[in-house]
Image (cartoon, rainbow, N blue to C red; front, top):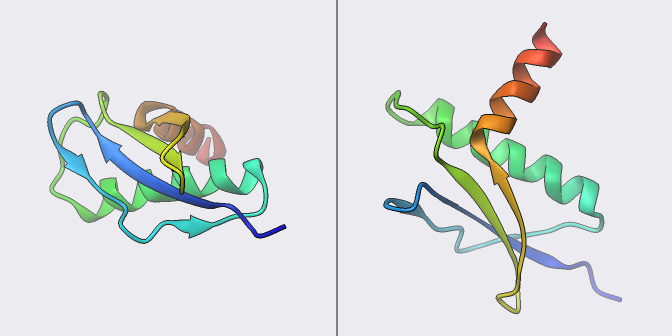
Length: 83
């Protein structure tokens, strides 16, 4: 069975950052971890702003939505690890 392809789009409901390539990941745990990396990369690489309303929206290659990961959760998890 082929490794699933996921797309990791980011949005706050007004602005949208599309993932045109996607990433093939074999497990849900790796998919969630990659979503956190996508959020962190966007937050660290962009002009500082309020990221609290942003989410990573994860879709299968077929277009089916599989998970939403709020940026706020990513920040909380990162702070807890640095704690």
